Image (cartoon, rainbow, N blue to C red; front, top):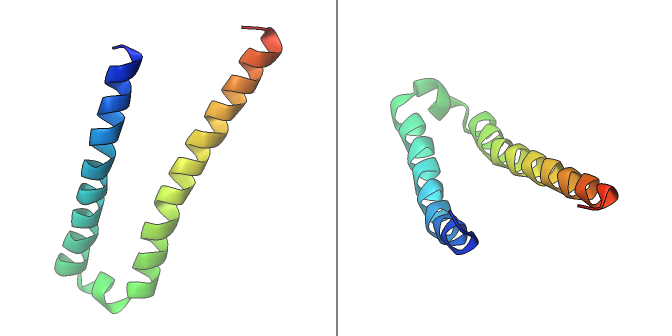
Length: 73
């Protein structure tokens, strides 16, 4: 996979992942009585989860780039 193909997959894949994530949230809210009774907890979980995942990816990739920079690669 070259650089342009990876970028195209990213540009096309991210919106579809967002749609799937929203469908997951709606599905849980429709089929789980506990989720409907505790919407604040569910919303907190579904807001924090992507933030933690994206933040950890960003930190790991920036640490990897910094290590490459120190090694002169």
